[in-house]
Length: 230
Image 1 (tube, rainbow, N blue to C red):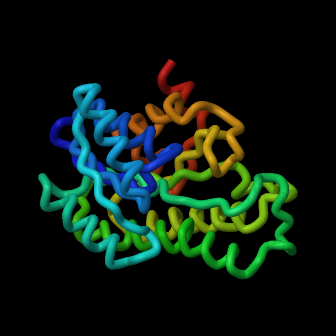
Image 2 (image 1 turned 180 degrees about the vertical axis):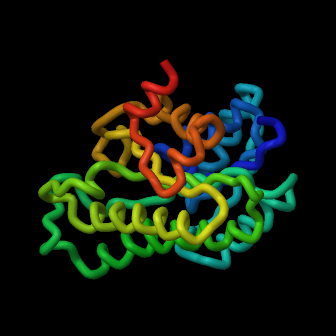
């Protein structure tokens, strides 16, 4: 992967952090962003100790100008962007305890601005800098398709992300798809689920080995990955 340029948003924690580390371990040119600069510095130091390298940048997916600068930087660092993993997301409540009708307007607006508009901005600003065979991976989970009580606007945002993936897939020549690793133990899920480090290789596989036709406009789930990599 030493010729591959990978951009990961939301790399300060959870899935984004593990995915950025996984690509860096494979010698990809990784440019990772988040709002928490201190956490990004910790990630870079951790990877340096393990012999990997990564370029970290403080950037907010809610700010399209930050995304524009980030994508320009990534392309200028080496070559066109080969992979974008749009991991940045928030959940302002406790999973299972967020009735939709009780969500505040402030929580609704920031969740949608981060989780949906943030994905839109990341992909939109990456497009001019993407390789012809680039892949865009958008993490999601079953709550986007299967109603669960108390998941509030977070579930709405994941459903919207999947709609964005389908829209970009239809309009772009590059491959755009959803990666659903199942429940992952992050702050967004209240710490319930698989370890993020254990599912990070699924994103590397989706970016490099999965059939493009199976990914483009589709949802690759944990079972598909496991069956393909037995």
